[in-house]
Length: 216
Ligand SMILES: Nc1nc2c(ncn2[C@@H]2O[C@H](COP(=O)(O)OP(=O)(O)OP(=O)(O)O)[C@@H](O)[C@H]2O)c(=O)[nH]1
Ligand SMILES: [Mg+2]
Image (cartoon, rainbow, N blue to C red):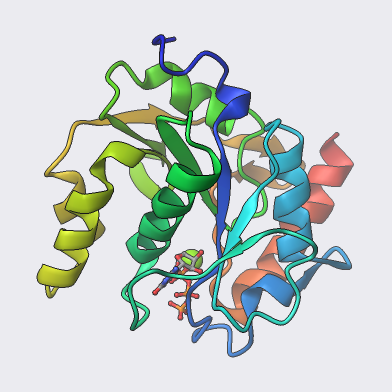
């Protein structure tokens, strides 16, 4: 572990919920999985791995933060997940001034690994490095550790790059990737970064949740 991250559990976590939920047709954060809101589920999962309470990145008029501090995007126009990452960096500089990095987790992936942030932190070697999660050879950059030192570069890039492809931003920086294994369940292997975008994904997630509960 590098000197600037003495304890991965002290990296401030931010829950990304600033999207439009357009494929779901209703705010995903409040969708019920196993009778519990996704936001509540994700916040509880983060609480088990981090000592610092999570902050929610979402619209300023968010109806119910479940008690989490709320940080809206600092650039207008819903410019994508990296706008949420930027808001988190700007917030951390003020509220967590000791932190070299912030952690981000989206509110629509309820099975993410219990050792996510610890393993991402182990991969970081330099103060300005990003670490992102990978499964089945696919990057999941919304599950990442982000150095607050690159906030100005991120803001400039978001405002200037019309395509705003996350991989184009990552190409500007030093990025460590960490591969996570599939989770064995009674009905097969579950991708820990299974992502709920549509009502059908939510139905599939109920099936996975039941299978996981049977397995453990
Ligand atoms: N702050 C912020 N977060 C965003 C924005 N767009 C997406 N996100 C977040 O990034 C993550 C991945 O985005 P998606 O899975 O596409 O979620 P979404 O944009 O709400 O859903 P769709 O409208 O169906 O694409 C989710 O946690 C979103 O809340 C944005 O413009 N600003
Ligand atoms: Mg998604």
